[in-house]
Length: 168
Ligand SMILES: [Zn+2]
Image: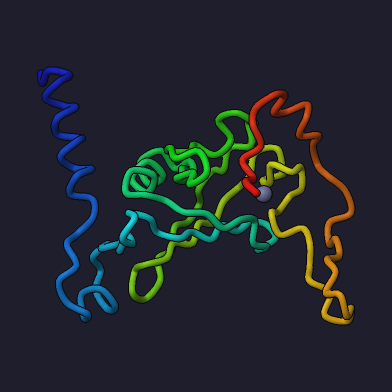
């Protein structure tokens, strides 16, 4: 029987090899290799949609570790640029995103997650989607109009004194 540390070592090597080296355009665009491109800061943008409605829930970034954790745990992990740390979505709020599909685009520099949100809301402000407002193109002042009627949860109750991630 293999020791636990040998097993762990094997798992870690497997995760390390999870992403392929980007070698040719044909490989990246037309091949079967997962070869994501992280930008100069080590980030890859992510769009997240709701499995049931198809609406866009949020846009965020992952780093290498966040993408690997998302793949291995099937729960969405991002990189918080405001808090500068790995961000397991829902760890504080309970609004975990269970990942059903992960798509990557043609040049493999953008990720699309399709998720089920536990608790039916995704946005820290309390709405289902972060995109709860629309720019009113009929209004000269381009004022925002709300497209979600009400909050699904009360952020004060859920987050308490935790600092707001929105930075001015
Ligand atoms: Zn939000």
